[in-house]
Each structure stands twice: as C-alpha cells, then as structure tokens.
Image (cartoon, rainbow over all chains, first blue to last red; front, side, top):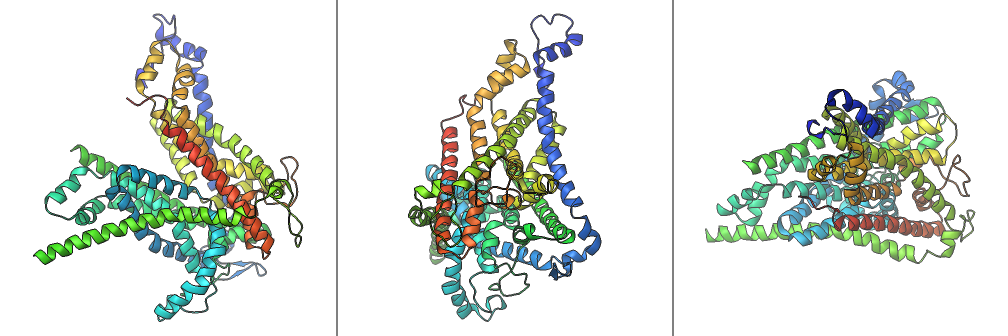
Length: 329
Length: 283
C-alpha cells in the first residue's frame, strides 16, 4: 500500500498531519470502512453458520454423545437417534460415484488437455461448464424417469446374472438404491473432475512432455508416465473436490436412493444418505430431539465437506505452485 | 523389438482414443439431458403452465404461475443479499485490505462456498424460520443469498485484480482519490467481468432446491407479501416428480425445461459478455 499515497490538491508540505483529513474528505476512509463492513459480514455469516449448527444440535450431542455416529436405530417414536445408516449411505454412494467418475473424468481431461486442439478443447470445456451448471433437481428428475427404470429392467438384472456371486450385486432389484444414487452422482461430479484436472494438466510445463517424447516415449507414455504423475496432487485435489460435492449432494440422491435406512453390502439395496434424510424429515420433525438430531446430521455433513474441501484446496495449490516453480527454473 | 514397438504404438493409440471416448461421453450427457427435457417438457408446456395456479389433486390441467412468481421473488431477495455483500466485499479485498484480513475473508468465503446447500438451508431455518415459527419467502431468499455471496465475492475480486496497475496509477497521478479511482476507473474497467460473476452466481442459485425445502417451503396458491411460504420451480419439480400422478410428471418435465432453459441462457449470456473481452486489455 506504500505506493498508493494520494496527494490531494493543495495538500502542501503538511502531508503527514493532513493526509488523514484529506483522505477522509475524499471519502477514502469512509469507503474503506463501508467495504470492510461488507467483507466482515462474510466472516460473520460463516462464523454464525458454524455457531448455529453447534448450538442447535446441543440436545442430541449431550444425550447420545459419540454414540450418535455409531448406532443404527433411528426411531422418532422412542426418541432414539443413530446416524450410522445415513453415514454409511452417504459414504457408499460417494464411493460408487468416484469409482465411475474418476476414470471417465480423468480420461476426458487428458483428451482436453493433451490431445484436442486448443479451439476444440475450449468448446468442449464450455459444454462441460454448462453441464456443471445443470441444477441437481434436474438430474433427480432424469434419475427418477430414466435411470431407475433402466436399472430395474436391464442393468441390475444384468449385473446379477454376470457378477451375482459378489455380495455387492445380490438381492432384489428395485431400481432405486445405492448403485443408482452412485451412478447419478457420478454423472453430476464428472464435470468438476474434468474442469479442475484439465486446468492442472494444462499447467504442466511443456518441456516435461518434450523431454519424454525425445527419449522415445510414445504419446501415451509421455502423458501417462510423465504428465499425469507431474499433475498428480492437483488431480487428487479435483477428486477430493468431487467427493465433497458428492457427499453434500441432496436432491438427486433423495430422489433415487430409496429413502430406507439400511446398512447392506448389496448395492441394489435401497438406502438413505445424510442430506436425503434432512431433506425428507426436517419439516416433519416433531420434538426437539428429533429436529436437533437432524441438525446434528447437518453438522456431521458440514465437517466432512469442510475437511475434504480444505484438503482439495491444499493439493490444487501445491500442484500449481510446483508447476510454475519448475517452469521458471 | 519391432513387435514391442508396434505394441507400444498400439497401446498409445488405443488409450488416446479411449480418452476421446471419455470426453465425448461426458459432453454428450449435456445434449442427452437437453434433448430429453425438450422432448418431454416441450409437449407439456402451454399457456396455462405460465398463467394458471396448480390444479387440485386429481384434476388435470393447471400450471405453475405461482411458482414462477415465487421463484422470481426468491431470486430478487437473493440478489439483494448476495450482490452488495459480494461486490463491496470484493472491492475491500482487492483494493483496501491488508493480507491478513484478506486471508481470513477469503478463507471464510471459500469455506462458505463448500458448505452443502442443505446445510445452508438449516442455517437459514435457524435464523429466519425458527424465531418466527413459520416458513417464509424471506427465509428462502436469505438461504439463496448466503449461497450467492462467496461465488460473487471471489470472482469479482479476481476481475478487479486483473485491472492493469497503470490505470490506477494514471488516475491517481491526475489527483483522484482512491475511492474516486475505484468508482470511476477500476470498477468500470472490470464491469464485464463483474457482470459475468454476478450472472454466474445468480444462475447457480436459481436451480437450488435443497435450501428452499424448509425455508420457503412450498405452496399451491399465490403467496402475497414476503412473510409467507411460497412455491418455487425447483421445489415444484421435486414434489411433482416423486408424486404418483401422470399429469404432475408432465408438469415436472415442463418446469424442468423452463428452469434449465433459464439457467443455460444466463450461463451462455454471462460467458458471451466475458468473451467480448474485458473493456481494457491486460498489458
């Protein structure tokens, strides 16, 4: 800020004592104060959010303690609340979605960053950005009317016939369930993986590729053994980002997961997720412990995504700094 | 050796083709969604959809006029909260703040940006529904506004920072004060970017459903004023899609098409504004 000293007209030789007055007259201090209040309100809102989640979930935190996280009973009539089926459902659907989305997303990102001409890559990236803007309730709508029937009629019976010996693909095929939710989630998070991974891959210095090619590597070998490892941490960051999105996703999951609190190895089984149970039961929750248990679920979800987002940001920053550092050397 | 080379070349070509397939699959999802919505929604959209209230259960016909108006009110409130805080906060970050304050504000904004939308809903519920004991348009607008703040803030700041230093120095050399420089030089120079940032944030919250479920709630009637529950398109899509009535499904498709069309148009508009270049070229 040293270079921005203003010299108001007629400030003269008494700059030291007059600078504050002249600043005030020009409105600089006032502008600074006003914009500061707006900026501070962002911090205030964030602090308030954490505070509200903490305070409003006091009852179940005291009543159940950490048992809240590891018990299975969710019975509003008995005032017994355990979050395990919801945590299980959230983690399983997120894991399924990443299993599907990561290979596809990274593959597409490699194509956009390494193979496609810049113009085509930009156009495709534009479509990917639009895809990321599609609201989740639209994915839910398509999930209900397209994915669920497809799963029930073709995919689940098909998986059962071929891979039915695995515990994941057993049991009745309802169409709804962990697998369906995972697939819909995968479609939703792929754009995030592609966008961030593409950026990270593009920031890998050119000489890395050229060195590999000069040593006789094929195009794929240079990409897979040199460029991708170079961008490894950033790609991990994009995956964590996608994971955080998948964990917090509400509408699409609510519409296709089946909304039954179960813990089952079978991916065909209907389940429930943290976000879905909040969405479904919040307005119906009678009694303070019930409502506050739902808010505590919100707190759990908040903490999960908070940790993952933090890690993602660290990883992405680490790669881009390393990338530019090597580029300059 | 020759065989090995041939194999390596084959692997290379194969894997590179596969990456192309991945990209095509990912992008085609967009066209699939659009095509399907246009196909199903297009046949269900009619004048009634925009002008009539929802019909009582069991009767066919009716529309979503109340949800469209409700959505507009919610988004207006969201913009009234999100745009000033995001814009002014960004000016503070880009022009006035020291590094430690800026770090705290940015950290808070990034944290807020990562909070799942359903948790934002709980927050708005505890602030604006619990104390008054009823759902309201205001509470829904608050939830959407809180979501808008970090997106507007961070991207506006980026665009303000991209304004070339020479412009600031030029204005100050002419004797303008800092606030005058910001108001007459820096913000006008970055206005395209700022407009893009605001539009993108707006499009992002326009389709949000989860935070509205227990703030704005829903309604099958007009919602006069700001203090009553109101219908909105996303929540209507949700309730209509999971209901067992054929007629409601058709309306859900129609609402989906309207909502997605609105969001995509705003997105494309925002990018078009930016693509014409920030008014001042970077030097």
